[in-house]
Image (cartoon, rainbow, N blue to C red; front, side):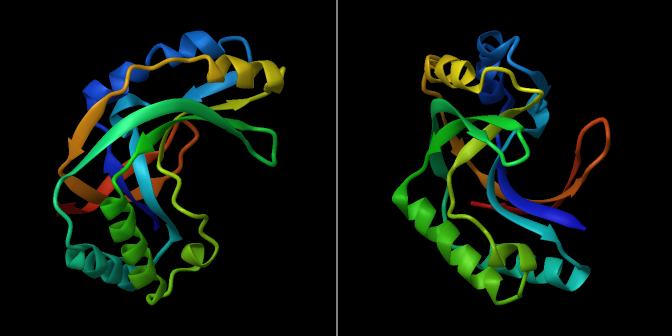
Length: 181
């Protein structure tokens, strides 16, 4: 199964991102992440089997961390190697939280999980949209830099292990385990 660990974004926070679309219209074909599927990815696990899934659950359950306050920051974009552009909003996380996530990743590397061997450093963000057929990347970058979202803070109460099934009409996420903070 394809899996990831995340903090789900509350609907009231996701609704605050609606204005981003107005700023990036006309730059490419956008695939928007649905409000109910927005999340802050903590660790992308890729393909794991049942034994690895059970080991990940044990790592999550061993995590000692209380509720954490997160806050949105600026909107940004990443140009990917295959020409797609990902538009995201950065998330401010306390250092204690970042340390706990680093410890979780280190524990999970012992499982082992192939995707973690090539994992990038944790860059807390919420993906808003993926654009293809992008025209004028420089102008898009400038438009994104000029987006001013009001800071929105929320308290995360849980971390969730999700299964992700990719489909032509968008991914389907299934909750496999929830760790209360």
